[in-house]
Image (cartoon, rainbow, N blue to C red; front, side):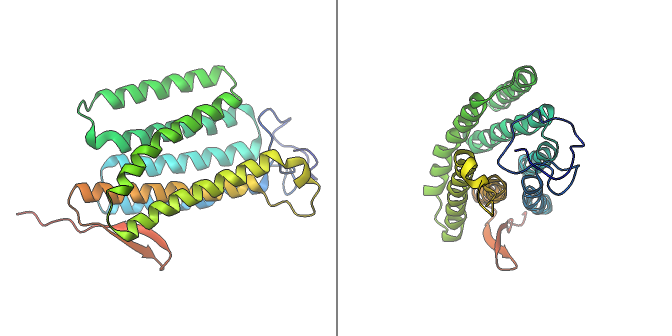
Length: 255
């Protein structure tokens, strides 16, 4: 959105422009709030990564946390520059991340272990190439929404088979943050003109970033709990400083 007080270091906007005045705080940062709102996701992903590595979870969970971190960093670069290439560098990891979730959700029950990761890898690589050549609009959003919806039935299956109340609470936080984030995204998108006339802009897209950072973290935590349960690691949900949930396992001693 035009109307900032600084000149653009990155040149004219060539990407999707969101409902935040550009270059208000710096000539190097196009959308300040949309940029800095990604940092909570980076910190949450880093904490999840350290927890997964220390407790020796399968590498797929480390890659999952790293993908969350990479996605947030890509979003930082995109909103700071508002350039088309950087937008593609944000959107392509979004698709890769969902493909990784699909793999983790289905891998325990997949009989042909090399088939699914090979298919998902080819799909992700093909999308990356296509996305570098074609500029998607609503098509990307529909595609991303479909990938998200594909994860929900399996997440629900894990939920109904989970007996621990604390783990179920993490799953409920995942659902709650998803709905709140979507509402913030839609509000920012649909009512931008009205919001722009207000004295205070609630920054719906920035709130989307923060809430989706927590959403990804809650999803990862719940999946780590379910996987640890499958492996007989006696998982429990602990809380950092009494607030942030994380999985703590107690692996059986080897005979």
